[in-house]
Image: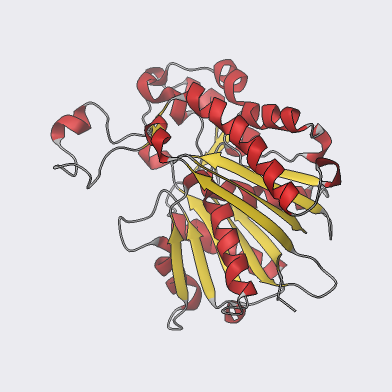
Length: 334
């Protein structure tokens, strides 16, 4: 009988510095307001790091996930770390997390660069590695430090108001015979739309890593075509959710809890409406975390548990869309 896997425990970490919309209002160059942000995104506040790194936050989230899984670091034999905001250009954050968690004990570490779908891609990989018998317990982490690389001017407003810092982690391990665990995944990408949501510089695609002229015009800041992202996000999240349900022989009515990637509350509301998912089955955290990219879904899991909305054997739909474009969905029993 093929080994199945499940999520054994989750943890999160949010920096202590909360940044409400009213604080962003005070930045004159940003030319924004609490009303403007809430109407377009549903976001009321987010968190910014003070002296933490992405690895620091991942370390704290991982410790909490291990505690909630009733496991120790000695039980973990592989790390998958999803982030679009690594501490350094190289090596990847997974190696730095290995050092913090395990010290002299070598443990395999892999970084995943799939932005807002990074956690879902990482979860699918962990599921496959456990099913294959290669590893027993895998730590899957999403962590982002956005605040240090945002454009706090009117030109960057549409992106800057969306993003926050934070980390989430999950321990994935073998499921018992009585528990169905992770049921299935669906994952896609379409690079023709890459420049609708991207960070162009610094890069190795052109002759210059980055020039003074590029810096002067703000090419080092993320850019987004909001209308294009919204249109594709709602369409693709609906499609991929239906696909993973069909793959596993389930229907929307079978779902107990829905955890969407937290990019924009309006996207999630529209997607849920198109899928005919009632609001009471959804858990959103974007109102007080902003978009923490690869960390949003594990943070949502922690919040769903805190609210008592996530219970043993609940059927849970995870779904996300982001830069690349990439989109993915996973269906699992909690």
